[in-house]
Image (cartoon, rainbow, N blue to C red):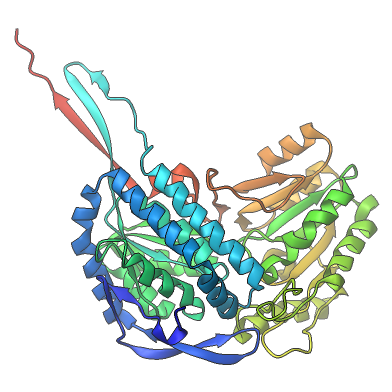
Length: 480
């Protein structure tokens, strides 16, 4: 069992301990549980250099051998799932059972990308001009700077590392400084599986380490899962070197409830869709648009769910369903959204404050009476807060769903398949669920429209996004 004090960044196959110590605070208790180094720009540069040196050999590694390495990582993670889950639960504030599930899901993603490494296709080689045979190659980009979020540290890290390594790239991973522990354990495990420099893990701040990676001339691609504001900053930083950007950014998922919706099914799903992971999910159901006929029932379903959720420290109490948000800083941000909405005339049908617990907790909250144009409807909160509004029929529901800067996910609740498919076609979002909200699959692409991002995670398309195409034209000199 690794202790927090033993965990360090890895650069070029070796522990890297330089940099000032940054505190690791357990959000469920507010207590200091460890420290990790902030490696700064110097550490970022060292990691890029190590990845650059390892890139040619890893790019030349056969797909079957890259796949074998990814499978070995998955096996190693599962063999130490208890350690990963404990670190994740304490670092992020998740219930322990949820953390275990996320580690298992991450291992599954490595297995998927292992298979994808061996099944990539391109256009058929053929003659498209007289006497010239055209061949299309998929080739690695080189060094990928992968910047992972704090809400699902290990789960979403697999979405970044898996396709990059499957495509023959080397990686510099920067986990969120607040939640670095499982990434450091992964670095230790991967060090025994991958050649030195293929996967480097560095910890530090966004303005320090993240900016250094985005501006480094030897980084070919920046892959970020994070907030839209962070994505904008990284795009600006990367622009002078014209890097490829792969961005999975913010979301504000609408939920369209029609008169013929199955409210029993809705009630069974919406509890998790809104409050899972303390609402810290870019696909969380945050805007519920219900028909006027069902408004009271929908509000009652959400209010009952919010009031019934057991909030607390899920690391020590298995009955807990929802833990804290990730930090005291983030708690203040979430509460600020709610307070401003209430001051503007909205009402909290449930929650609206913070429970009397140590740590960074927020009450599960249901807001009614907000305007479509209000901040709490338009902006991503990333906490256990949902707003309920009404729509005046299909056209109005779709228009309100699209009346926002984000376009990551949405759900439609109706028994009318024609209406459901029409809504799914017209809603501007990368994922639309019909009579459900939340499931993803490794085989299916995940990403956003509009300001929710660029590129797709998961599926074979994620591997393709981490590669580049080359046209090789062979002129044949036939004897006459």
